[in-house]
Length: 254
Ligand code: ADP
Image (cartoon, rainbow, N blue to C red; front, side, top):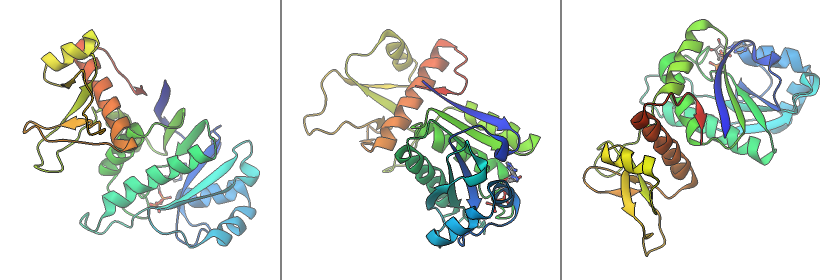
């Protein structure tokens, strides 16, 4: 079981394999957290970044971490510049976390630290960003230790609250709220969660068409075969069982 934690502090002081920076497209270094990371890593970071630039919003690239060693890599991701929330800003922010995690997995990282991407100069509202950060990393916990690093108390509190929220999903067909769908013989805890209406039981037999949907809405629509959907529904199932049993499910993930 991995851990996902909200941490208050300076990201350049984190003892992790990978530090993520909230870069701009040039990857030459900027203000805010990116400036702090470039100062700590030394001038070679900008030289390495320049060779990979431009990096588009929502994408991520990796360089060595230079003077930040024993940190091994810096992942540079470019957040969305906030306009009004209707220009795909949420999707770009989700993509920053997803692309960074996938890249970190390729680099065989055991631990990674993220700043609150886009919430400074780029102007993304802090609470909405905390919610997206928490939900996205919880739906893709492919790195053993994930730290969401806040530089101020308020962001720290927002991240902690967001990490404690149950995972939510809505039906792509009708927009109704969904619950995780479980195939196979359910354990007793899952049966109790199903009785409480927070989990749907799909039956012991897997669908014959080879698909294994992971979500169901009240109108019986079923969906979700991607790896991310699967992980997300596992986390939701874990939440539903913990809530049903009255456990403090904290921020660990299955
Ligand atoms: P963006 O341009 O993506 O908005 P910023 O660097 O302006 O990026 O801000 C992103 C977040 O990083 C803000 O919440 C800011 O407070 C935080 N931050 C700034 N310096 C550090 C640091 N040294 N460690 C961790 N977080 C930091």
